[in-house]
Image (cartoon, rainbow, N blue to C red; front, side, top):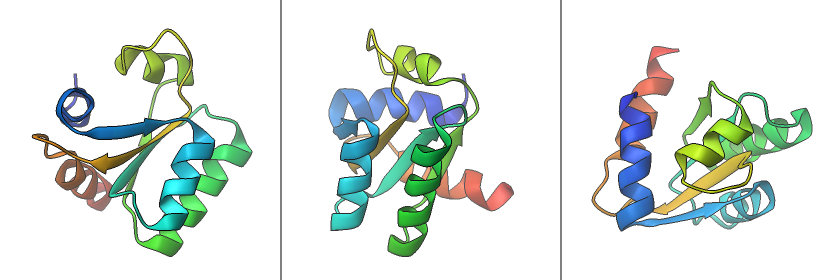
Length: 105
């Protein structure tokens, strides 16, 4: 398990995270998202929109290397999650982890 996956679990438990592409894009556009995660195997239109609006808003994005189903499982949900936005990180340090990961790439 990577650091971002561990921090995501903490954020889901102690903070506020919205799931789903439409809600993620909406929160990024409104400037409420502190960070976003999108699945690498999400539909191309979804991935493109999340990356585009996040770049405009200055929101760090982590492209999860697995499928949307794996991202849903990581979030302890019985459905696919193609994208999610972190609104409040709670006790986690997910925003710093995503920023550090994006600098590496």
